[in-house]
Length: 304
Image 1 (tube, helix red, strand yellow):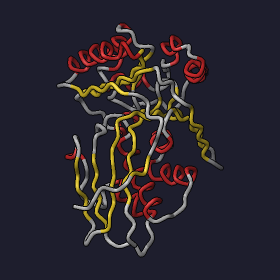
Image 2 (image 1 turned 135 degrees about the vertical axis):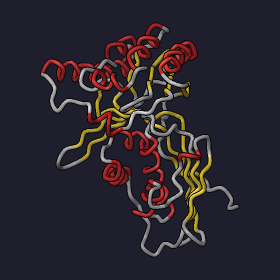
Image 3 (image 1 turned 30 degrees about the vertical axis):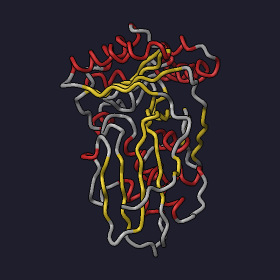
């Protein structure tokens, strides 16, 4: 086999408040994965967060996903992984790696899987579909998984809304963030979240962005995760006070995400960063757009 592939994959934010394990939004901060035949399996890290790229091919999610789809006859491969998505912060770094590896193998070997096939495989590896769906398809994706099928519908995200992402300096393990959640919720909280999740989609599609202040509220995961995320409640309030339409925890945290008018994103970012710095040793701050394109195969770079 001589297939080569280079794939760009966006970051993603899950939940967006009330859409717990249902909403995923692609964000235009992108990792890149290039696979090419080599004399032995190897991984070459690059990018801002290169130190967080596992060099063990058995631990690297992108390499494992690539191998899971590659033909048995495929020889050794080298992966050049450019990591720009902040690690372990609620921005879908693992989803990006899984999708990048699968799309690269599908492209390099002409496997012929469609998006539905790729999404099913990515969900099997990741364990849940929200982030991998956004990373694969781009835009805002609503996912529902039943015993029989995985349903994913892509919703265009308005281009006149800016996105602010703030990653505090502290770390919240995903397993711990899951462990603090209750095993059940009240009817009142279920109804409150259902209404707000529907309101978020309706507000985005009708241009009634002021409704995002309520639509990004949550009653079934954020209140319980607040104890692990000291920047959450003050960070959301700071974003709203600075002019954001709405704000929420990104995934299981500690990253915070806010939606704002384009001319207020820098002010919102500054207000949220101040809170994150007070709550930790520092933060990473991004002002970005939604990524309307998901995982994209590109022309491979020349071998070095």
